[in-house]
Length: 114
Length: 111
Image 1 (cartoon, chains in turn cyan, blue):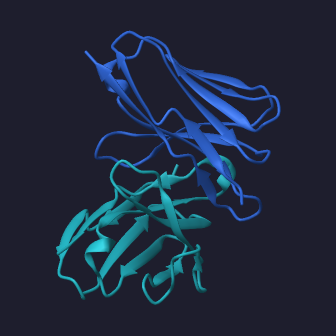
Image 2 (cartoon, chains in turn red, purple):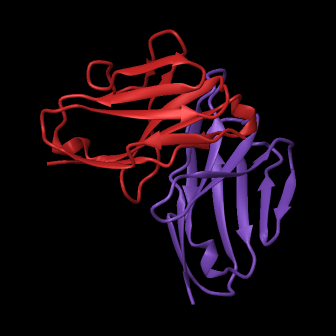
């Protein structure tokens, strides 16, 4: 299965600034996703990152706040824009060739906004 | 919309006791997947069940997929401290490639 490298692993940011999180996959994958996870909670899907086109966002998430890029089948970025303390969370990318074979997760980015 | 419910939310057991978590989907699933997230870690794919009534084993872990393909369970025999973590079930959302995750069951094992 694919291996996903995610960075940064953690960051502390000032409110009003933006942070870009990167995920690099060691092989081409059809599907990539971005999740948010509060400590002790389940995974909340932010969006599906579509290669070469605009991401598909879930209800409650918008492109202006969470712009996503996916220039090819091995790389994607998520930007958390104009951050507020409410954006403090763990952000995870995930990917794989098919939902029928299970997905791999990056190691996560622990974001704290002060 | 499609939902996946998982119970219990938390389970504390003594080392050596058995543990079971249950997963129920609001819709019939093409497959059910199980993931484990260790404290401070990220979810790791454990297994996928596809067939109605399927049972798969991984050492002390037994996974079952219901006959109607709407429910599943994970049973751990004789828990060890290495089993600590949160276990998530997840099912595919129709034709989107997305996974719908349950709320997870957090297992604590007392040595």
